[in-house]
Amino acid sequence: MSATRLLVLGVVRLHGQAHGYLVSSELESWEAGQWAGLRSGSIYHALRQLAKEGLLDTSEVYEWPGRVDYAINEKGEETFLRLLRSALRVPDRRPELLNAALVLLPALPVAEVIELLKERVEALDGEREQLVATAREGRRPRSVAELFDLRAAQAAGEAAWVRDLIGRLERGEEPV
Image (tube, rainbow, N blue to C red; front, side, top):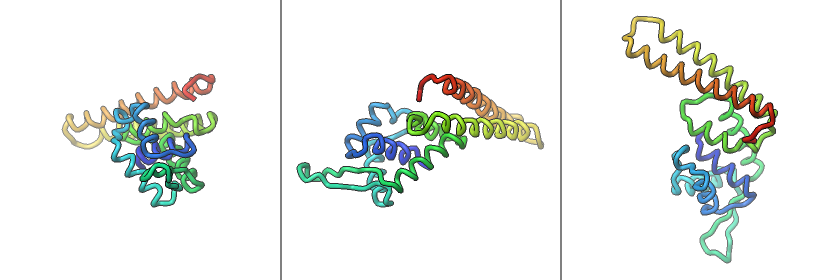
């Protein structure tokens, strides 16, 4: 899964209909280049690719030669929701996926977000336990075991943060 795909589908969905410059400007205003590694060229490429895959409908704007407007269709909506749910549920070492999902949280009902995040916590707890066990097993240099300890600490830290987010959501606090 790509954070770019998720974000581009999310922005087009948010606006109902959008052209490349609008999508790019919106993501720039979110500073997505910093936390998702987005560049203008990748946004325009994603729009064309998503349209080619049948996830976005296109229409030319005759008053503006060369401008194409995009709208999410049913297949695109299904893909967007699947990608968003997966990014919330499944831990991934690529932080841009969770980052993209967090900015798009309002697309799902709060109760569903909470359930997806609880699944993420369970997965992170399991990952941490496995990493701790792996760090202790076998005859490997301590420096290698440190890598597993670091990853276990990262999983534990993320799980703690997600638990806190779940608590805030359950209390009705933002970001949703």
